[in-house]
Image (cartoon, rainbow, N blue to C red; front, side, top):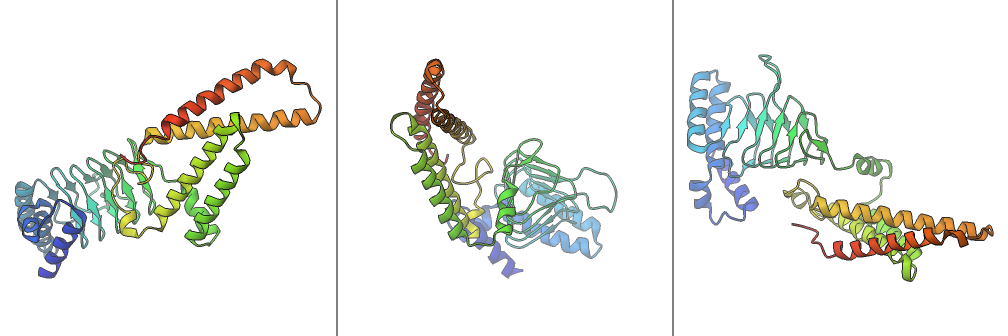
Length: 316
């Protein structure tokens, strides 16, 4: 019992920068109190002392604002941060090293007695504030549930679910590619950076083609950041993100604008290739002066947007 308690205190001090001492954690953290009382209630539940188990869980709810059914299974080093309004159902299973923020519901969607009605969180899952995970499915190891997400279907390991209804925003193609081509992460990162850099050198031309070069450089930078993130230890990769997505590109607005710029640059490059091909075929481009002017305006607009977006912070 005391070993588990020391382990829980060490976990809280590691994950919460506001925790200043073990005594403060022991006396002032309701998440710790709820877990300690839940262990006693769960032991009573397994010994068929059902009323006593429910009474202990009710007292824990009154004291901490965290409602954990005594039938729920909670692993080691689980951290319930703040915790007010957390509800964990009877058949829920929480793996080791999970983190749960305030207002989270691990609930069910059926009324079938004795069935698996509540979710299973595997090792290292992070559930953001206000999220609702409803159903008897599994959330894979090291997955993240974004704040206020409503999840009603399984989440793959190391995936990320955000929105209502929740959608998986981490592309599954990355995992498939990694499985198909068993190369080291560092080698893959170097290849991605070199490829993007090569594209930047090919597409970067003086004057008007600067937009394409800037887009390729941006792609190289983001590839390098993603590779660096993947090379970090698991404890750092599983750090909570405010928007529930990657730490190096945490602003959805910035991501969307960068995507538009990359698309515009790709279209501009494609048009340049078509013009060069037509010139090689001897086609006269005198009648395309209006189109060239429109293309020039588009490139200038893209360059202006790129100049503004490059100043946005990668994190918030």
